[in-house]
Length: 347
Image (tube, rainbow, N blue to C red):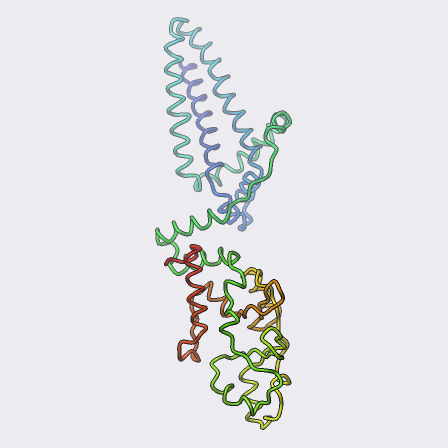
């Protein structure tokens, strides 16, 4: 009788270990494992290798689980027949099945899912060596199942999942509301184009390049813009941009006979279809804060500033020079309505 109880205990513990380990390995987050692996500790590195190629460890655990359940049941059946007689075999099989379902399946899998993070590092090294020991059998199973399991490797996460986790983090207080809003804005930056962000041509202010400083001195002084568009003859012939500060400096230095074109900097042009994330990189590369947006016919559609792109991430940016509501405010309000309609921010 003692032998029978010992065999039953071994079968239940072995099967429970396999069920627990399988649930832990499948439940622990790969992102969290990658964070642990940065510590360079052996259990964390072993766990990372397991998660990166999970099919072999899972196959090892499944093999062991079946050994305990099938071979163990055969041994238990023979032991029951030998010690108690065949008439007890049916009753004992029912009891054993009940014990396996409760103590080798439901309970260990529930604990494994609940305490996956705490148990995963402790199980990593044993699973690693068990996989090595059973590698010939696992290799054979891989070859048999390869035609059915071959496919594209799925990414660790995706944009939808990160946005969902952001909302959960905000609800639970892990992420501040302003941080959550910025994360959402960042992910949708590539949903906006230059045409969505630009100040349209109908609202643009500009100077003709052949004008002398003394002719447009009052316009420069009263302008609320730090950068002024310079054109040749028409708005579709932009020759550059001028910094208000440089124009005022030239006026103070007595260079009023110079033309605006002489003080202009080369203009940078982008298509109206350029995405906002690429616009941000464009501003970083050219080291300027204003680009001219060109439509499909080569005409000027408007202008986009670095501030326009940054406001997608932060909301309105108002500096000390914004004393009154200008025409650009219309463009800003249009942009905010666009963000709301696309679900980037709450209305």
